Image (cartoon, rainbow, N blue to C red; front, top):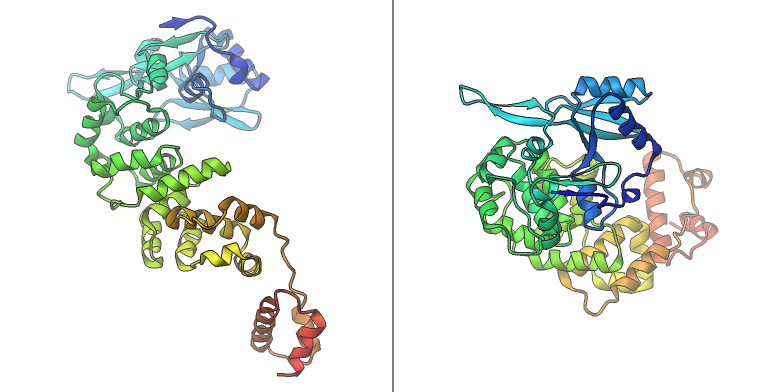
Length: 407
């Protein structure tokens, strides 16, 4: 399906260097088009997408075209024949068109082609196989635009073939259904995902985890996770959760408050783990050191509602643990417990607006008071800080130092 001047390309093209890239390819006798997320999300009225492009030039030809026009390139995907072109300090991925060929021995290989419809047939979902050129002309080989409008998410051709090419497409199917689905899930696609779910075991856990995290930050994450649990898609490493209601509450709360979606928060409310379970989950999913620290800390430190709703203990809590931790714990608590008697929005705003008090005593002050020995100085500093916090941050430096002499 060809739709002339269908897209407003000003919503996609934000840099003159992108135009230079198109010109460079055309000067070398090739064609380049936007594909995937940039086209799909623009059609859906979304923003903030990455640019992905496709070209009928081979990778070597594309590199030559870019070099002749002063555009820097980086080989970002050797197996996928993808070249990164540096545009305004960002890397735009450009993939050469490919088609699948079955050899005499039954082995399937990918080879370069200049056939755009053949390339489209190798993509995963109909909504991801829509291309657009610089003039806004749209090329839709599998009726992806109609599927997008109706909220239908389905594989191109035989779903099992698409999944066998890359089992991670099982997770991508659920992710895009969570984001764009408006109708009951496509039965044929779901059946293929269930049949081939064990093939996910062959994929690096980090790749599966990243798709899981992307699912969790979609508005319909709870519905997608229910489908995943009901069909045991991730049973080999992720237990079922019966707390989908908490995930729904968190999703709605974050949307209403216009907070950025956070996959760690959403995973936490799904499982509400003990510290030991939080650590185990972080290890299984191979969190970064920072992610693990945050996740386990949420589990270790409990926050009672009255601490959040009362100014004095709230400021003490903010001082001890920091604003971001407190914001997270308010959102987590509201999702898990409901907090019906607390104005969550007001508490979040008060946390953001809080002026952090500064502890007025320094280590040298303690030394000047006649105390020596690092361990002893440290213990006194801790005691003075607790006194200061308990005084609602009102004790002065002089009062605190005077208390040293009295003990």
